[in-house]
Length: 378
Image (cartoon, rainbow, N blue to C red; front, side, top):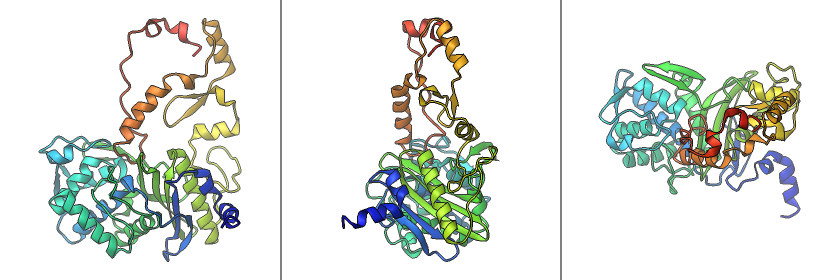
């Protein structure tokens, strides 16, 4: 066994890169359903918001059977409204159109809407969880058990990387007329504007679905579908330490899957011209620019949860002249900001970092009251 371990790591170097006991992955040929790769594909994992793929499957099935139509409305109960973020925030007693509910699940990963859909289809969310589990068995997801419609933490709600890739593939084949709901980066439906948590849309060539997820117990998860060169590959990843790590790893697995099917990976990072022999682009323009012109880590300022920007030497000099020695800004407020973020994403996410807690009010301290110029070098 000890002699076999190096070979396994060599075959799955990215698995070692993830470096987490929560890690699992699976790569599937979209046409045949055959395995193309993966690691710990049948080990139990928490699905987090990937659960909503099954909630949507059940909703699409009800629409196909005529039990719910696009003209129907989904009632938001007190129970549904009590769910933690991410949520749409519709007051209890109100209703929303079915299409708004669909986008709220596919793009915003709204937990309150997931519960409302479960209640509409099953009477109670508990009963709906049983229905979801029965449907999972029918679809060949033999190692999945659902307890709720959203993916909010429940130790008895488990799945596998293989089962979730299977569910993504069944959504594509069973409801081709609904597949477009997973592929929009941004959309407006009724009075709501949605932005998709799946950042690989438009960043990796051919990605057109499917879903992301996160709770603390699961790490960052996703199921991704991409088509290119007449082939389609489904990938599932569990246990990423961040959405960036998760997405980059999914991109590597997609590359490997397409390669096994005879399709070459994308050759360059968009907008940079940089040649990428293996890894496709899952980077923002700002991140790609950093690759083109690397800077020291201490000179990188975290300006948002999705973007980084180099601090120039001139700016650093101006900071010193303003009366304060330049300090790595990543030290500023890091613990408090991280704590706020953890509180939100622990409650159930869909990608987790698009919607974060509102920053705390500035404390009335001498540092806060000091003139801006005194702190310009931070």
